[in-house]
Image (tube, rainbow, N blue to C red; front, side, top):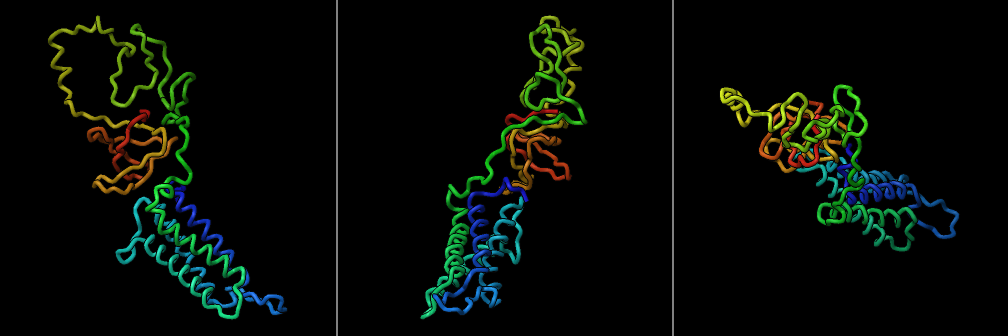
Length: 279
């Protein structure tokens, strides 16, 4: 489970489910000052398994479904839809149970269970609709240093995550070892003539133009913050999440986007390529 994919609404669902589970062990009825031991929901499995645990299981289905890159479906319905229905059932059952107690007082387990089930159902229904509940639960991670690929060691004075070696400035005044933004042209490389000395003979011009404009060379890259990887079929749901601190392989370019490959062999479209660091 990727905790960064959870929202604040999922946090409400998880918290309410924990309270509901605890309430199932508290007194279901209250007999006041009577010496009779008050039962809890587990004294009747119809209440414990058929009501309380239905709500807890519904919360688990909601969190599990929303934390997956692709929603799981059963009989054409998402697991989250089954989970929402289960939480509403639990709240509906406990509400009418506490209304129809008659001469018996409600115990702490029944009262706390009703409150938790109402919060659980509200969180399950409102999470995809309320913007405040759709915000990430953990928040975006801070940029961190990315280790270079193939076991290389970063040199002092380099920019964020750049795996190249630090070198002395060229005659043009540019640091060859500094990271370049994705797509930028590098100038002043060691061993290459300066612009005023790069007047090549006319017979060498066709060789420079021989490479096609759309030629693409795969390269390793890292992202500064976690970014979603979408399917190549154009599906709006992400298939994976690229995490900082890991190197991925760019195998193709489609306009401003990149086709990236993860460590497990999955390919997808990285739409936001701003700030990525090339290996």
